Amino acid sequence: MIAIAPLQSQPVRSYASSVLPLPRQQCAGCRLHRFCLPTGLSGIQNSQFDSIVIHRRVLKDEPLYKMDDPFRSIYAIRLGHFKTHQVSRNGFEQIAAFHMAGELVGLDGLGTDRHQCYATALEDSEVCEIPYSKLEQLFTEIPPLLRQFHRLMSEELTREQTAMLLLGNLRAEQRFAAFLTNLSARYSARGYSATSFHLRMSREDIANYLGLTIESISRIIARLKARGLVSISNRDVELLDLPTLRALSIGELTVH
Image 1 (cartoon, rainbow, N blue to C red):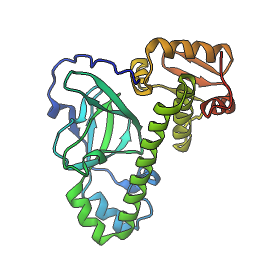
Image 2 (cartoon, one colour):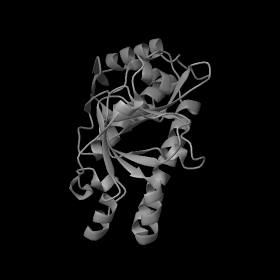
Image 3 (cartoon, rainbow, N blue to C red):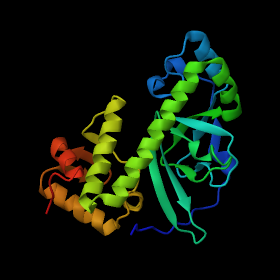
Image 4 (cartoon, rainbow, N blue to C red):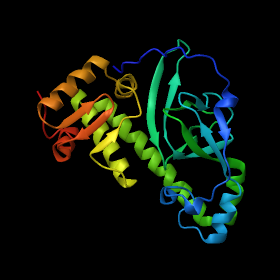
């Protein structure tokens, strides 16, 4: 049974004021270029893509888009972190995923023309908004762009399938170890440390995502610390034995 935490009430703020325009920037100069849609494009093709992109800032705890909003754009995270989550009619929240710089959000609205979840900034963040109608026009002019889009969609499906496995089949300590090693791999791919990072999400959010209680998370952290596998202080994480954590995440060992 997945434990779903009640949605905490937030002060009412203007949605429009939380997504702020930024000066236009060129995709070719972005350090995350190789993760994003224009990867592999020529100089002229990059310029065509740049012409449709809108750069925006989203403030911490504010929505980039809301569940049931009309689908108009997809978003490449340029800076910061987001969570995607659904909220039931009874006000209960279920977190579906955490997203970091270099990843796309907004694909959930592609099939129904409405977003199926919220995307909320975990810190002050920046996104590249890509209007989908204009992107479709570019697909016909730039075939490599369409192939890259399909590749990114495939990666998103793979992440969703991995999350379903995480929640459905793994023991509690496996889930948490898999969560940490997944973050490690994603940060490493972006040129950051694989073993030392700061969690942008709260412990409550992590528990919600993993289908555990906060108390379970605290007990697991205590066991991992006792085994010398991690050092966790508030949100600062150091993975002291990454190979053993990976072995734990796939069920090759247990912690007591």
